[in-house]
Image 1 (spheres, rainbow, N blue to C red):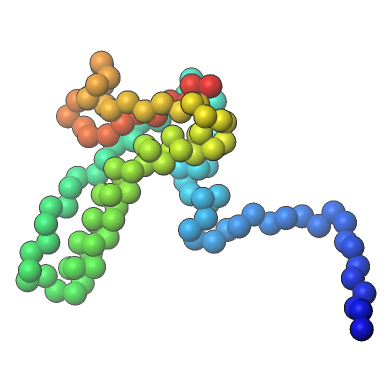
Image 2 (image 1 turned 180 degrees about the vertical axis):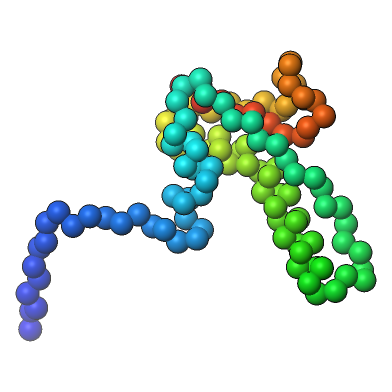
Length: 117
């Protein structure tokens, strides 16, 4: 009635490498490599605008991908700061818009993220 179970020791745990996993996210990998005082400049992509009605299916798919990439580039600074907070504790990441930093190119839209503790 009972099956015998054998305890095996020293079996390595393989990290989850699925596509949506945060462990394979490039921003998470950058956050793991950052040391105190390091910063990353994240520049947002250009806004794709609004889709015209007369697009073909291929053009609609291409426009939708550009829209997703644009939205991801806007969320990247917040995601990087969130990963820093996950890895190193609360308050270990800081964000500042590029237009509010002296000596930065104010023509670009984006943010800079620092690891501060």
